[in-house]
Amino acid sequence: MTAPSDLAPWASEVKVKNKKLDVRLRRGLDVNGVLNLLKTQNVSNIRALRIPGSVGLTGLRALFSTSRFASLDSVALVGFGDEDDAVDVVFDTRISAQLRVLKVWGVSDAIDMRLARGDFVDSLRQLEIRSSPELTSLDRYFASKRIAALKFLTVHNAGLADASKLFQNPACTSLTSVSLARCEVGADTIRSLGVSPCLPRLRKLHVSYNRDSSAIRPLHELLRTRTIPQLQDLSACSCQLEAFDWGAVRLPLLRRLDLRDNVLEVDELAEILGAFPKLEQLIVNTPEGRLPPRLDRRIRIEDRRRRYG
Image (tube, rainbow, N blue to C red; front, side, top):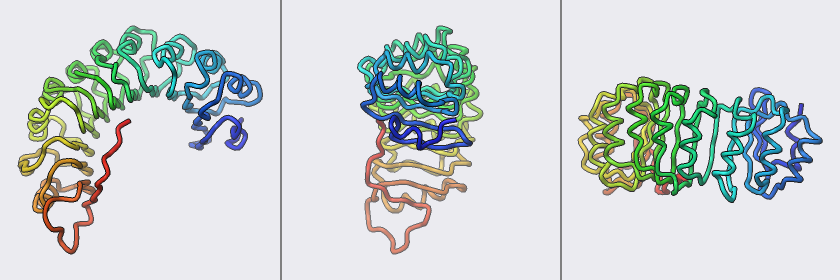
């Protein structure tokens, strides 16, 4: 099996987890480099690959057409000239039968049909889509039975306009983490989330910096419902939560709350802490008003915006 040091000519980073390797291939690696890697190294213990667009579609096909990646179950594609073509390579080669994690940057609505049509495995556990302004819909996938194995969904900085079909789908009960940040999701998505009976395992929800202002009021209503009482991690940055009635919130197990880019007064911080008996971390910008000499250890002041690329 390949040792991390053996991959130095091809990889900018190698992590070891349970004797398996998570590998970030070097930016600039081309198809010849890929062929050399496959020719000289035993890649059977590589579990995860982050692949730069410099390898091209030919290099990508070479990676995924071989049967030597016996342990590979996680793929990230970034920087391809046409990310949709790169995704097609994934679906069309043998590697799709073993993937549990798929991460892509820059895709369009074309990925929706691929995910829902039946040529991808039913065991996809994690889907992550970033920096995809041309992605406006995942309705076919969200409404399909293929969603049943999905536990972690991340869609950041995309044109995604509606995710209500996901929360209306009885097959989505395995979801433990949903992150929809810097998208176009509106009121229908948040209302569907608020009334969904299909999210018994949801522990993490991120709905920050979304660009449709119609979602603000439904989000406020969501915080007052008992639909997601198991939630432990909530990011609601820039959601106009100033002067909010935190005493009405029904999230008894919440441990982490990120409220950056909401204008909060110093006095509100104590109210927020009092509303969540199990809260371990409250992340805010510097609040309005004078800070006390000693700040509650659970409060972390962070004035940098969280990046959702």
